[in-house]
Amino acid sequence: MPPPAPPDPPGQGEAGPDRSGYTLPVWLAAAARAANGVLLGEAIGGAVDLELLEPPGRAAIPVEAAAPLLEGWALGQSRCDPGPGLDLTRGLAVWVLARLEPQPVPAGASDGWLTIDAGEGVGLLAASGQACLSTYARRLLEANLRPLLPPGRALRLRVVLPAGRRLAERTSNAAFGVVEGLALIGTRAAVQAGASPDQLEATLAELERRCADPAFAGDLVLVIGENGLDLAPRLGLPADLLLKCGNWIGPVLVAAAEAGVRRLLLFGYQGKLLKLAGGIFHTHHHLADGRAAVLTAFAALEGLAGEALAVLHAAPTAEAALSGLEQADPELAERLRQRLAAAIETSAAAYLQRHGAPALALGAALFDRSRRLRVAGPIGTALLADLGLPELPRAGAPRGDH
Image (cartoon, rainbow, N blue to C red; front, side, top):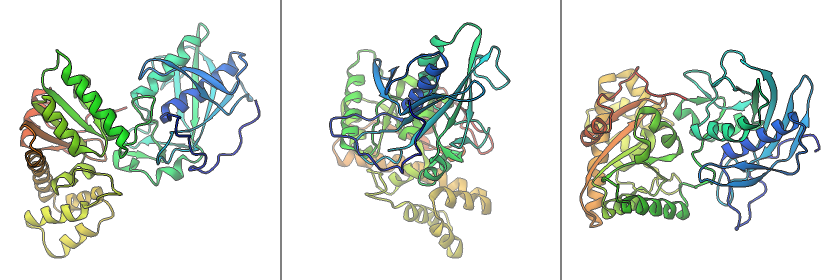
C-alpha cells in the first residue's frame, strides 16, 4: 500500500445515509490490525476484518495504509468515519506503529502481551499520565491482535492522532481529567449521537427490553454520556444496571417510570446534570445552556452575593466556576453542590409528575473533572449505598482509574 497521506481536516467526507459509523476504538483497532498484519507478512488490502464485540459480529473496516518501517516497526493508518451527523472525529487520521518484542515486555506492559505508548494527539489521564483508553478499546485490541501473536512474542503499539491535540480543544476532555489529546473511548462499535432522535429510539428500545426481562428487579442507573458510561463501572456501579442516555433525559425518565423502573440513579458529570436543577431536560448545548444562570441562582440561595456572585456567573465553564468557588470558600462550594444535587432530584420528580408518569425513587450522583464522585442528593446517597458504594468519596479521594 502507499505511504500514509497527510491528514485531511476533520469535517470532510460525509458518510452516506445508508452507512453506519464506527467509534474511535474501532478505527484504532483497524489501524493496529493493519500494522500487525505487515509484521506477520500478510498482504493488507483496503480493509481489515475485525471482531466488533459490542454487538457481537465481524465487519470489514477500511484502512488507508499499511507499510513496513525501519527497526522492526510497521505502520497502519485508518481514517475515522463516524457516519451521519455532527462528529468532530470525522476524517481524523489514526496512525498506529507496531513492533513485535520478546516476552516479557518492558515495565508498563498490560498483562504481558501488549504495551501501548501514547504518541502525539492521544489523550492522557492527568492523574497518571497513561493513555486514556476505554475498556472496550482494550477488549477490541485483545480480541483482534492477541490470537495472532507468535509464541514468545509481545506487541508494542504506538498510537498517534496527528490532529488530536487541536481537536481536543473543542471537546470536554479536560472536564474529565484528560489532557493533550483525544480520549480513545467508546463502549460499542456503532456511533450513537447523544442529540440524535435515533439515539433516543435506541435507548428507549433497550430500556423496554430490559424492563421486559423476567429477571428485572426494578433498578436502573441512567448514565449521561460516553465518559460517564466508561467511568461508572470503575467507580463500582454494577455494570448490568447501566444504561447510557444522551441528551434526551426527560423522555427517557418518563419511559423508565412507565416501564416499571422503581429506583433510578442519574449518574453524570456535574457540568451537564446541573441543567436539570434549572428544569432543562434536553441537555444538548445547541438547544439549551443555562448553566451559568442555574449556578448563580443556587449560589445566591446559599448566600453568595456581590462581586463573588458576578465572578461565579462570568466563569468560562461550570467546572471553572465550581473550582474557583471551592478555592475561595470550600464550605460554601460543598453546600452549593449539595443543594444542586437535591434540586436535580426534586426537579426530575416534578418532571415525571407533570407528564403523568408513575412516581419512583429518583436519585442523582455527580462527578467532577478529576473523575471523583463529588456529591449525591438525599435519594442518590441512599441508592449508592444500596448499590455497593456506602461511603461517598470526597475531594482528594478519587475512585476508579483506567
